[in-house]
Length: 479
Image 1 (cartoon, rainbow, N blue to C red):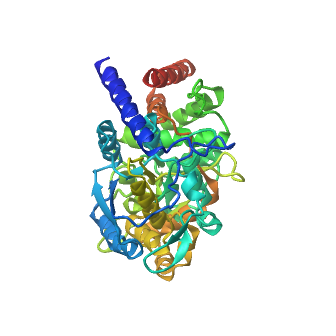
Image 2: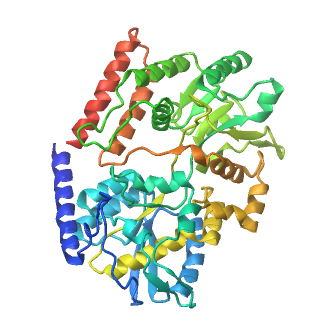
């Protein structure tokens, strides 16, 4: 109870600070028109050239910070009076927690690395700038090189974004207000031991039914193995909802949590049967990423892993006497309907925070626009991070294309995973983002884990109770 009271006080103080900010900058609500989208009043002059300093909170390690530090001077050639300061806050949750605290004092950064549920939390205080007014702005801009453009995006720039990545920014309200832009993205891949598959004449599964039969085949070949590892129970559950077209969550405040239904209970029961037969394990059950089983040189092994394309390097085959033990290959994960594939979109986006100085907000927009539309930056960041770029034109960059062409299943898995991520971009989906959506994700992950390991005789009753408990926990946390 004490924790809940503290959280409530924190949210109330965030709302107070944000209300004060809005009253100072006049921003939100102006120009909503008939779209229903929340709007921000962009200064009529756009960027006036004044000297401003903007701050960017992120979770980048040194390698990615080096890329950022290389391109900030390129941005400053265009806008020499905008000083960009950036700080790593550890992991993504570290960024969230730091900003949550900063918002209560009104000293939040200008820009942040973010996940959708983090933005939903910040927006309890209405602290995030809705971007539609910037995206659509035709205010003329002339940079320090004399190049003329507009403040917003051109139609060509919008079309250059990979649609599934771009559309994630509009998942926060039913009107489709854009609160984020994609920065770098990952998805899930089915990694498999190609050498083992070819040796035993195994076929790659395209459906979950085929996956179940394949696991049975592999178990017969190697009785001590666990054929499949799935790193994220939450991703598995959410992806199955999307593939089946069954309810998961909703933006409707009266019915956010919709995942307790017959279809979802059915696939959980099926996968529980797989676990009981020794066909599958998960990160939480195994106690670590299942790449540890995939790359094992002795003891128990697995021959397939469904995990993030951002972690491809961990699926690299081990070497003995300088030689790889097998070749890794990857494919789109199994589907309910291969003709209409669905794979989850993950990875950081960027959001902009409101400020009492509108010029800081405009300067932040210019920097975010630079990061998300600059081909050279997106290419360099992708090669350094293993995340997919968010614009299509990066693939025409010669250096980047050479990097992709060098992809192989022995030493350059990162490039191979990016190629797959780009190839399946038409299949991406995102879930609604609201304050409480992260709790739903946590609860369905726990539900999956508990159901898989349950040995109760009346498994239908047990699964029903697990679903009811998960919904109750979500609703309690949202109160």
